[in-house]
Amino acid sequence: MTSPPLASTHAGASQVRWALTGILLTVTLWGANVVLLKVVLQYLSAETINLGRFLVAGVFLVALAVRSHGWPRWDARTWGQVALVGLLGNSLFQAFFLSGIRANPAGVAGLVSGIVPVLVIPLGLLLGQRPSWRQGVGVALAFAGLVALLALTLQPGAAVTPGGLTWVLGAAAAWALYTLWNRPLTERLGTLPFVAFSLALGCVPYVVWALPRLSISGDVPPLAWAGIVLSALGANVVAYLAWANGAQVLGAARTSVWNTLAPAVSLVLSAAVLHERLPSAVWLGALVILAGAALANWPGRGAKGRG
Image (cartoon, rainbow, N blue to C red; front, side):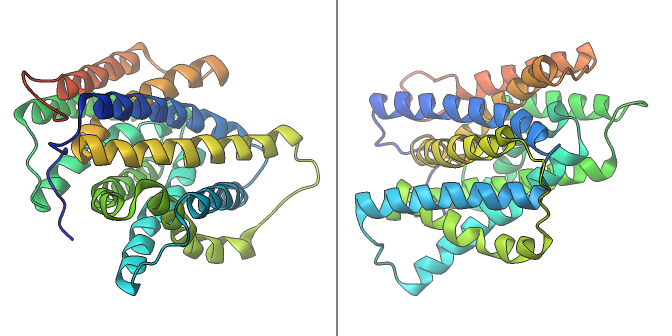
């Protein structure tokens, strides 16, 4: 499957502004979602949480897509492509993501969003996508900050293990591939139909695997269930739609670099809400990542929709 250029040359200024607004909302929701799920994991298993999120988000998105566009009339190959990309962005990503949150402090688990742009650029090159020099330098700077953060979390006494970081890297790889491959499908099929049915089909393998492993105790507080609904509607509905639109208008690499803001949101909220105490050097590393994101997205002269 080949992808078109990184950002559409036909995207107008208004489209770009709305896409950037959606991406900023997305990274805020995803950064906060890490902390929310860390809290909910105290009361429910990862399998129960993911099944609840898939149910809420899937029903909502499919109903919205069918009401807005009718039932898709895709051929078998297109349904297969949607299911495959959905497998990456739902079954694999969500399984790795929840395991990473469970195995790490929330501030560290949130780094999954910062790793994605580091992976999107080389993967995009393999697919024939050519980033601008500014995107390349910005991602390199973000990568340097990310490496520094990862090194700090491995210092003696840090509540991080190689296994925990492996889950984070796995989640980032799954989402990077999802980001690259969702754009040609959203352009051809429409953002809402693609997001809805890729989630509905992509979560099926996880549902089949997780159902026998459900474990629910009788003392789960109502707020834990509310957290699942909030996570599903925020991170899986609003954020997925905004992310897919951003990738379509801005391009996969530029969109993913903005996602480096999400770790900063996770770090701030993990300290404020969960009282996680990470070294000050971690905050410095986060600022380096943010600087890389700003550089990669700073518009050049005469640029239209391109970073």
